[in-house]
Amino acid sequence: MQWRKIGSIRRWIHVFKILPGLLFSARVPLADKLLLLVPAVLYWVLPDVLPFIPIDDMAVTLLLMNWFVDRTERRNPPPRQ
Image (tube, rainbow, N blue to C red; front, side):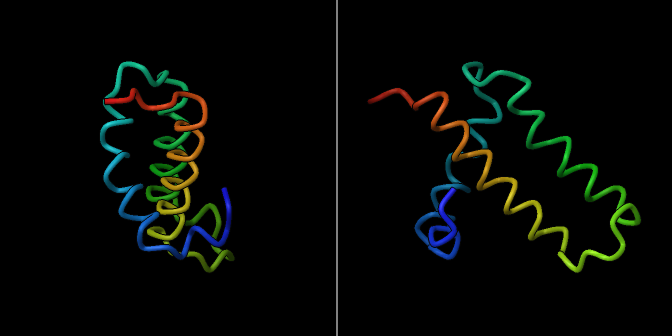
């Protein structure tokens, strides 16, 4: 993941467009999907575990989404249409 891409509106549009398809795709292994879902859900449900980190829940979720899309696209390139 390149940090300069995180501020790009084009990148976030891409992430929000492709994420639902990746989560419901049979081509993406369940273990990869859980690498996004488990940390995000735990961070939202258990905010007292990391009380001294001043990062908002949405920021952590967005970073996880970006990382998941990058990782999944590298491991399972989307089919060409």
